[in-house]
Every structure is written in C-alpha cells, then in structure tokens.
Amino acid sequence: MQPNLIKSVGVAWTLLYAAFVIWIYATAPRTFNEATTGASVVAGTYAIDEARFRAARELFGREQYAAARDEWTRADPAMRDARTQFYIAYAFYREGWGRVYNDDALFKQGLESIERAIRLSPEGALRVDDPELKIHSAAELKAELQQGAESSLGDLNPLKIVRERK
Image 1 (cartoon, rainbow, N blue to C red):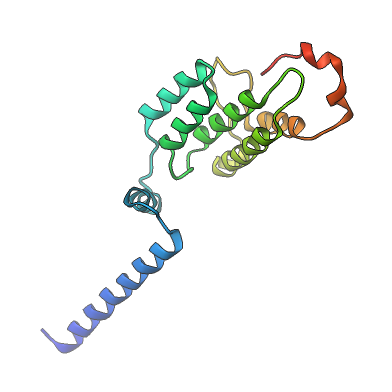
Image 2 (cartoon, helix red, strand yellow; image 1 turned 180 degrees about the vertical axis):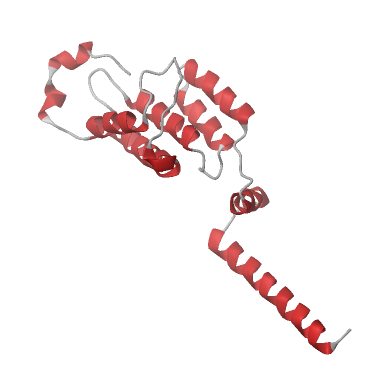
C-alpha cells in the first residue's frame, strides 16, 4: 500500500471516531437502548412500537390515563411521532379535566405534548380520526388545554358542573 493511502484511511477513521464521540456527548444517552434509538432517528429508520401503542390505547379506553401515558412514552421513546404525542396530550387533558376545576399542572404538561405533536406534524395540521375521541385536531386540543390552564372569572361559574368532557 502506498503511504498516502494509509494516511488518508487513518485520517478518515479518526474523523469518524471524533464524530461518534461528539454525537455521544451531544445526545448524552443514559442507556444503550437510548443510543440505538437516537441512531435510528438520525438514520431515518425510527418507528414507534405499535404493540405498545395499541396497549396504551386500550388503557386509555378504560380511563387509566397515567398508565396509558407511560405506555405511549415507551412506544415512542424519542418523542418523534406526532400521533403518539397527540394521544399523550389527550390523556393529560382527560385526567386533568374536572367538573369544578381543572388540574393546571396536567394541562400544562398536555400543552407541552400537543405543541411537540404540532411541531412534528407536516404543516402543523395534525388530525386523528378516532371515533372514540371527541377532539380530532391538534389545534382544537391545544385550545382546550390553553383555556383550561388559564385562570379567569369563568372558573367561578357554577354552571361548569354541567359541562361535558371532550
């Protein structure tokens, strides 16, 4: 082999190794599983775990919202799927909704999730066609969460008791 070729290959390997080390420091994965998930996102091969998604959907249907959110988080560990983030936000909405008052902390977490879903969806126009849900668009869910998270004089309205959860 020629000395110039050996030097070139050595420089290339050094640059690749340096890029790998920088990527590890930048992403700071805590486990090997997080590192492989990050690599699949970078490579464009990331997909959610559909079995876990369906299991979470069943938990959601039984009104076990916290358990459903945990399962959806496991189904989408990189938080890169807009539909999954929509369902997580919806679970925060359902659990935080109350006849007399709303849980502001849950609504704020729901707002974070729905904003992530909107960022991930093409053109921010996420729509979920699920007949069991009363809210189908991300914009409508975001408006409900924003309205529920802010305090106003309307919170003192006694007629809120008869309102319907979406």
